[in-house]
Image (tube, rainbow, N blue to C red; front, side, top):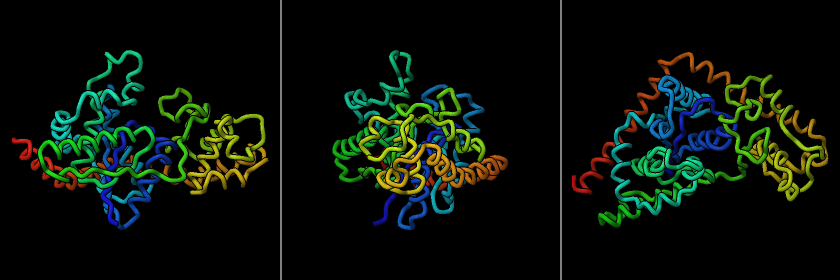
Length: 333
């Protein structure tokens, strides 16, 4: 069955292995399925919920597009655009914020995590972020949205908003209620220095992550220095609950090779970590080095990247502007 897929990536710059295995690798597979219609959005409106350097933001938008293309997303098959240049996103977010309820937003755990202890100093944008996310999805009648664990709650909110809008204005199925697309055989990618923390560009040590712009030597060095424990490789999946670094590295290997975690454990059971790390580094170099080289090459051609975005903006605007005009009519504008 044909799927209409919408997904967004924040232009934070310095995308890493967690972003690739958690989202972009999946986007490439979705893009390559001829039955899918895919829209990939660089969500720059979401990015400014926390303060951004304007020049860096511009560069990060281009870098995100370069990463999409270098990873294998074909802009001829899919729409790639940045959110701020399609006015319907901001308009839709306001209208839907008048449909969403405070109680729903108060339950969003990600705001509590991101705002930290002093939530009074967080921006209103950070608080209402999930309503903008709902507008992003609903403007395109997306049937499916790829989500990780941290976004499941936001997609549920999007579904609630769509259903309430349809009920409030007696327009059955006008806003498509999207389904989640959950990746199979995927492990959440954690820091190479601490298996209890998510891999992040904000961690001080660059050794904690594999950047998508890393070269061969950097990748090999980071895997050599990745934290492990003194025991041999685990023999059973149950062991991984107590051995977070081993779990993370085996999860990365399994995601790269599209294999089940149980099979990866079986392949390396009882061996030394050094032997496993050699294999893992080889898989990473084979996958990441060509992407890294292509990102660097694409970033030298800003005109090409800007043309990709402009083409995507025009295509996205054709869809979203029609939907927002109909939404305005429905609410009485």
